[in-house]
Image 1 (cartoon, rainbow, N blue to C red):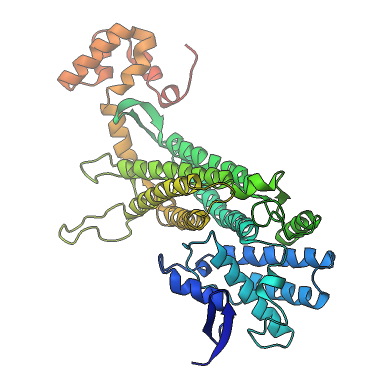
Image 2: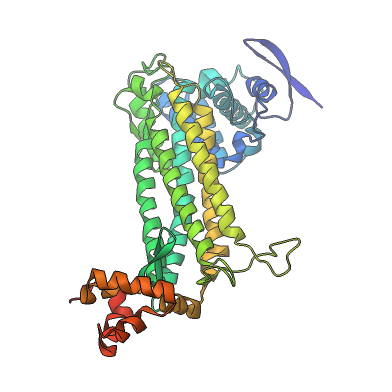
Length: 465
């Protein structure tokens, strides 16, 4: 393998001649082999890093700090990376020491070498265009990396929101499809009062729909960045006008409402926006897991459970029990939710572990947030396409549960009184005789009155006395 010599603070190393990265990236690759997940696994992060570097090059050129030919080469290189080129050259592990320095230098080196090629120079000819002096000019890892991370999470949130909207739409469709089917509602796994299967699915849809707005709220927090603060927020080594120029250029490149934080020292160490976004993902995961639990309960059986709905059969369910089909799609959604809930704790601990002017644990935060976004998006699409859209109602089973339930006695309380209703319920429970039959037998209500009170329309919505 052909190599080239590169140098850094620690000395010399041979770097593969065909590599677009450099010596600091190679050292990070040697040091950190923890997750097996390189930063290229999340193209949103690569795009965001390139956008930050492009914005910095524009600002530095406007301030006379970067010659036009270098700024143009850097910006063109960044544009190629934003389009998806050379992502395989971003090789460092997501989890790394150094508060993200390895990720930042991976970006600096790839962009520098790509820019060098556009200027007609060989890779590694850093005298012509340098990863630190030029690509990283007016920056530190401590402002460039968290800014890129925030943007990456905002980018990752968009397909997640689309997945949520798709599942919500499917649940609402089922709500309309099942609107005429009367069934028993349940509280604490005990018979409660009647409702329609449509109301149940409509409630699922409304509950999930709330999450898009929460994601938008969290993304707005993430759009406040510390770019220009450099090492600790004081802006050392940056021009006084650099921060606002760079952030304005970044807003133009990203087409996001990016704004400069009011206090860059505070913003450099603060992980609050990440914690908020993580809590939003946890909230979404909790709701999705509860929905999956409900689908599994409602479809339980098929002969000895609730059996009110049928989930689409996706695969044989047992290596020993013929005919068994399991609710594998909701089960996978549950497990995804558990992982996201656990990741929220990791984010919380990492955010708390910050010390003084910097949080060195940001790589763990970014890894977990990007991974949770991706996992949730994929799992939601799976639940939507391979489960919810194919759900069928068992109308006869729903009707049988209503007819046999003691819970319908609640509808009679305003007409026969609580004491009579309690006595009738107890008799029904002991004798197995239906509630309506016992009420009519005692002459508490006529057949016509019972029919009106126990009609589907009267039992699933408020009515005048």
